[in-house]
Amino acid sequence: MSSPSPHIAPFDYVVFGGTGDLAMRKLLPALFHRELDGQLPTDGRIIAVARGAMDEESYRAQVRDALDRHVGAALTDEAWATFARRLSYAAVDARSGEGWRALGATLDQHPERVRVFYLATAPDLFGPISQRLHDVGAITARSRVVLEKPLGHDLASARRINDEVGRVFTESQIFRIDHYLGKETVQNLLALRFANALFEPLWSSAWIDHVQITVAETVGVENRGGYYDGSGALRDMVQNHLLQLLCLVAMAPPATLDRDAVRDEKLKILRALAPIEGADVDLLTVRGQYRAGAIDGQPVPGYLSEPLVGTESATETFVALKTEIRDWRWAGVPFYLRSGKRLGAKVSEIVIAFKPIPHSIFPAAAGGVVPNRLVVRLQPDEHIRLHLMTKEPGPGGMRLREAALNLSFAETFKSRFPDAYERLLMDVVRGNPTLFMRRDEVEAAWSWAEPILDAWARDPRRPHPYTAGTWGPSAAIALIERDGRTWIDDHDRPGG
Image (cartoon, rainbow, N blue to C red; front, side, top):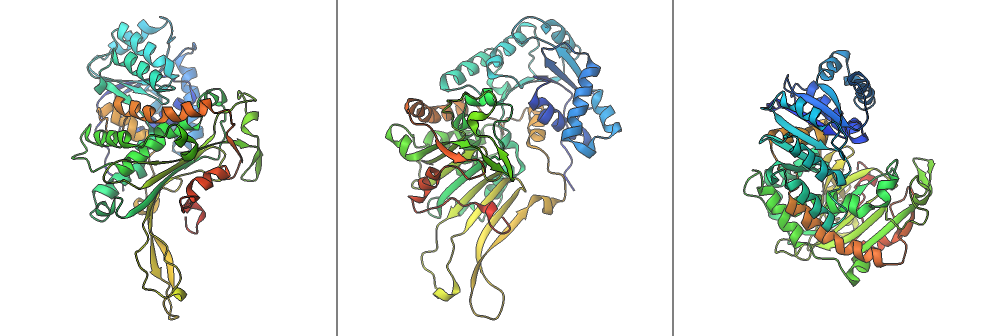
């Protein structure tokens, strides 16, 4: 049985980009599930904002269709009727004055409520929207603004956006979202480390050989070719998602979970990351681009044949890299990161590879001793699995075998697994910024990533090709194997 949901204050949730893919696929289904769990206050409103003229009934019909696709059987007529009463629509042009006064008047009906402005728009609109909200007097002391990724294209643009939004919102009102931080398994990584005495004494270079972080997708760029071709895998995934996961793995124990304590420790890790620049870029990074291949037996096109992608594009769809953290806890421990599209499986996981035992007392006939590893699976089939050596059952003498202790959340807790957005959307209303990125975090991540991007931009060579449905270019294998290690694909192992 799940725990009771904490009380949520009455709110007005204003979703800019309310007809877009993110709103329909993630945000509104997340709010609907919170409705089903009884967490939304009776008088909370959800106000969708977009440019197109539309009446509310037409908008509600769009939302109903989206929920039918993404929520399924939970969408009963009764639940829909309750949720639909919250929904309204406002036609507003973010770049002009059209519709803003009407939106301000709607919000003024309840000036005492928490106001959340969720900007599910292009990042170049974050500043103009914030300024328009200020101009019509819509920003109150109980207002918050949510900024979706990507927050800029580089360090300079990230600073510009932060400056523009920061002119009208205080830093405590700004919630820079990374939905990976809201995943249940990521939260359990904190619980695993800091609520148990077992692991934290081993969580250092004394016991850990290396760390691997993989975020792999089987999909291509889908309908995002125009955006993706100007971004690439390093900006789209590594600079935010993977670095945030690295921080949670590597950070020192915070004094508390209050507000900035966790974010302070993450910032220390970002600032301690060894820079990758100059000749090290070629040595420590690999960029790839998928060619035509097959996913689940179905042929798929190469990246250069995707809609809105330039036929000569050098944008990377795969990144692998090696980095280190220059502090006392982690000195000498390599962190291997990889992420890409059109790979062999959809999987996100963190592998903590422990050092081998110093001496084996077992005879060769017993079999080899494989170093222990801890696997934190974020998706799919979220679990935490500890791989240990054990004796095979039976009277035939000592035969060693690797086995896993498995904490499967679906099997253990027997309840629906909430989407990351469900937690994060409610945390915004509560005013809890723990799982959101602070300005200095974002800028530290860009400062680390930018020398890699600059070096790639100057390099006339194209990204390494790889066939869709494989695990990336062979250069990514060489990156780790020249250190005497290999990528641990836990999902390919029996029971993985």
